[in-house]
Amino acid sequence: MYPFIETIRIEGGEIRNLPYHQQRLNSTMRHFWPQAPVVDLKDVLRDAPLTETETKARVVYDEGGVRDLSFSAYHPLDIRSLCLVTCDEIDYRYKSADRSALQALKEQRGNCDEIIIVKDGKLTDTSYSNIALFDGAHWFTPRHPLLHGTMRQSLVDQGLLREDDLTPDDLHRFLKISLINAMMPLGFLEIGKENVFYPGKNEE
Image (tube, rainbow, N blue to C red; front, side):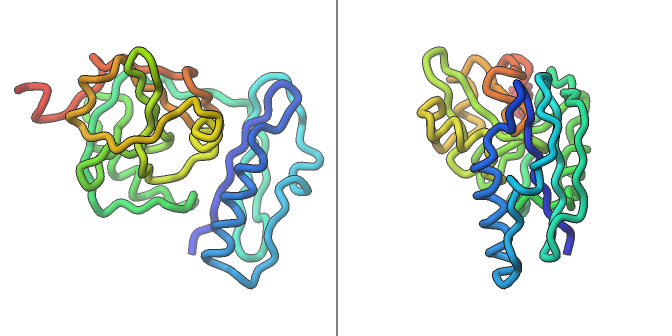
């Protein structure tokens, strides 16, 4: 079995959303290794560099504990266009180091920079982030993402994101899409709906 990962943002001298990362780690370990001692992220990150600028902490763990810990400056991807790709078999409920299935889907992006995965007729995630869609008044996020991201859950709990069942046909209701993950807050990276492509639909 591949190990699992928590990617955690350090910014403004603080470790961000740590309780959400701990909750997800706990859930993962309970599922796969219920008898193993749970990794305490606060203890793991006790000597983390509390930088003002964005730093990415990457914690790799398995039933034996932390296998690797690294810190690096964050360099966001340049994403300007999205392509919808359908796959009903994809399963990424746990943040595994094995991203081969996601990468295989990303290779179907054609001339676009990134994909949005459609599963069982519903919008889910990109290959590396959750999504939020803005209709001019409110932000919405798919009710059933592939991965329950820590940033997404934080925004839902704050009332800044509304969960909904969203299909490709709903895209016309929205003005733009924000990609969100532990390193990208809401509004950090946005793509206008004119740059979201649905093969077979855009040409109709």
